[in-house]
Length: 261
Ligand code: KIV
Ligand code: NA
Image 1 (cartoon, helix red, strand yellow):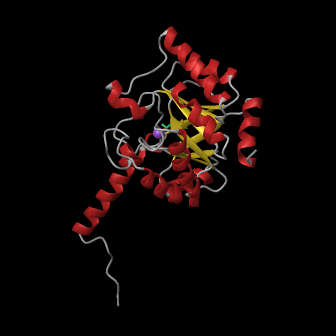
Image 2 (image 1 turned 90 degrees about the vertical axis):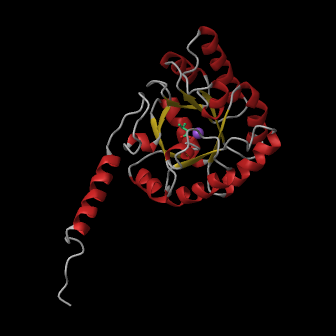
Image 3 (image 1 turned 45 degrees about the horizontal axis):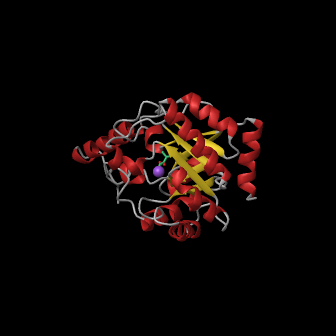
C-alpha cells in the first residue's frame, strides 16, 4: 500500500484524528503543509470559492488538473486529493478511469468522486487498476440542480440506512476513503466504526476518522460560511483593510516614499 495511505489506515485503527483542508494553488498548499496538515483536497468547490459560481457544475477536468499541479508543488508530505468534476466520470467506469488518470498525472495521490450505490462498479474498476479512490456521499454538491438546494442528508431512518449501505458498499468496492458531508453525527459515527475505509467528515460531527474544511471558510475568505464550519481567522477583512491602507497611502503620498537619488 502507498506509504502515506498506510499511515491513515493505522491512524484510523488507533483512533488518531487527521485534518484536511482544501487548497487550490501553490501558496495555500505550502501553508497547509507547513502547518502540519495531513491532507489537502483540490476540491471542485473552487468553482464557487475561487471562480464565484453558485455551484460546482462548471468546473472542468482541465481546470482540476491545472489546480492540482499547483497544489502538488506546495503539498510536501500532505496526501493530495483531487475531485473528479461533474461530467468527467459518471457515464462509465472507463470514463472515470481516464479522467482519474489525468488527475494522477497532474500529481494527485487520491481521486475523489461523488455518488453512492450507483458508483460502486466505477470505484471497483478504478481501484483494481491502480487508482486510490475517495468516495463522497451524503450531500453531494454536484447534484444540487436535481435537489434544488444544498440540503442535509440521511436525516430520516430510511435515509440513514441508505447511507450506511452505500458507505459499506463503496468501502467493499475498494474505496480507501469516504467523505461524509452534511449527515447526522450519529450516522457518521456509526459508518466510521463499521467500514474499513477512512471516513472524512464535513458537517458530520466529531466521530469521523478525519475532518475537512473549505479553506476559504476556515480562514474567513468567504463572506458567509455554513454553520458547521469554524472561521479561525477573518483573513478577508484583514486583506481588505491592508488594501484600503495602500489606496490611502497612494492617495496621500505616503507610498512610495521619496528617495534622495
Ligand atoms: O469540493 C470540495 O471542497 C469538497 C469538500 C467540501 C469535501 O468536496
Ligand atoms: Na467537491
